Length: 309
Length: 162
Image (cartoon, rainbow over all chains, first blue to last red; front, side):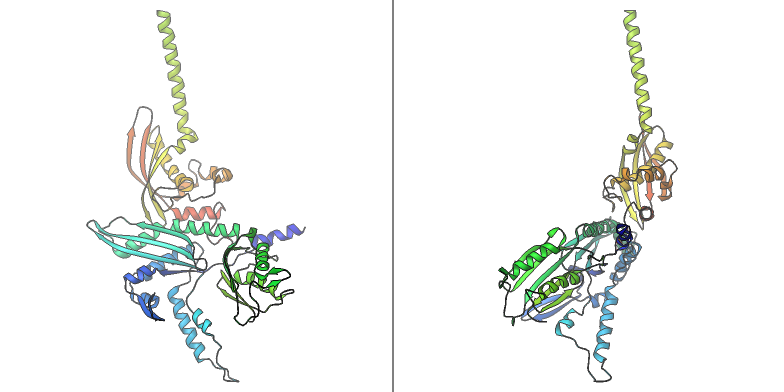
């Protein structure tokens, strides 16, 4: 009876849907001079200026639009980077103007909040193309790659070189390049999602400590170091105990390739935040009784800081 | 001497008959479906154009077989150099698993013909005494075909589970 009741729930359980965003690759931005240089503590650094690229380049709009329409057709609408940049600017302007009518207080924003206030997605699709001129006409070289924003893993890639064509205009060549590359790309993306449904979502988890805390990761509690207690919790709560402890010092523990279940015991979809919350609760209770701050980056990264909030 | 020649003649006749029976059955067996060559010609908006070389007794049979083979290739084999280098139905053994669906879908005059957009009548014909190798150019409506298989729950849509 219980199993019969559970089945429809399981059948309709839906995992948290990752957001996808198309951005031009750094190399494409560099080649078309859409880069901004800034001084990072004495070192000159170049970063892509996406806003300028969207405003000035004549090809990027149609390429992103074409990819977007093909992804809508697949039931996976993309987050539009250009609109997202505009929305962030509008929200920031409104927040700056917002004051409480009773106390005159403004909106609280930490330096970290400011830094995080940028266009982001769980999966970033990078595009690169180049129009080649040959004696037989023009051809397009095209690269489409998808990266997991948290694990930095390449989850899908498709590259191609179109045949030289002397009759078609560049926009048509670009459209042809996209339609000729999208199916292979999407099937790799599908394999990534299949793996996620079979083996869990891959996240990053970092445990740090505040400088002011009187303990560290090597402090022993009930005869075992805090690191080992956390490790045991990870073994019990990850899918098939899959995770790597890539760094472990007295101040920090980094776990990568952490496979977390997509649903909790109540069949609710979970992400890095809910998973991190589980560890936060464990460390808040006896015998630890720690104060723990939990921060997240999207669906795939959780950071816990021990000692205070 | 006469007896020997008669014996040789009977043996020769028997061999010829058995060979003919084998060859005629080949064109109707599943072996004929797998015996084809495919070449990618180009991709369009939701379409894939291929050249298929099939083996059959006559041109008419080869043209029909060519359309069927083009669909079979994109579904179960993949097309070299095309966007679907891997099969559209990625599950190993799907053809057997969904046998009843595919038997109906791929039967002569079956639903698969809905996904053939264009067939070029410029044939490449290579004749031999027993068979003809016929090459036809076929345009497959790959997006519609994918949607058909998604609706039939043979393949999963990209947003499945979210």
